[in-house]
Length: 255
Image (tube, rainbow, N blue to C red; front, side, top):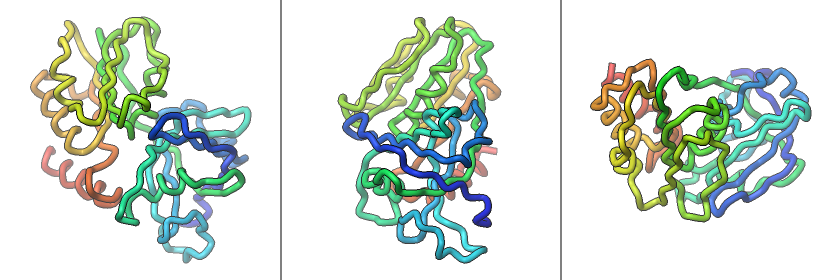
């Protein structure tokens, strides 16, 4: 990866929006070409081997460490993107690069990004919609659910660390939102919901093991493959690189 592919942005502000969520606003003229419909899609934040954002010492063919995050909000007129980070500290310094940076980021600091990349869109030409997320996927769910048609109906099930992490959401009138805290199971809650009549579209993003449980349930319910977006955004106990390996193996096993 060459440095010419990096987009360097400046920290405009940093706000702790809930007990365990930090929001960083990044600004830069390099966002001029950012797609206006990028909210809910992902970017890569780039770090050096020490977890810092200074990439100047990287060799031309050396790859930075990348961490994947969601564009929570894009303000094209001001060339600003907002990124939400789950606040957490890990003993393994290879984990939590981005969270540690976000919790300590100062106005005026710079960080480089790559992207954005897109994720599968929700099929809204259905009878109802089911959306499921944990804290890591809450920014993506928040962006995607706000784009649904006003007449959309269904459920959103969201797992947060604690009650103080519940956020106001812009949702269709006929959507029911269920908030769970850390001790509750996403899968159990989804299974307890009344399965509505008609064709369903599913959007799910969460921890790796929860993703696999939910995928099995959707298969049991015979949800059409083309109506499912399901992804793991992290795996308990491993870095993003370890998570990628687990996802790759899982994909092979489920061909």
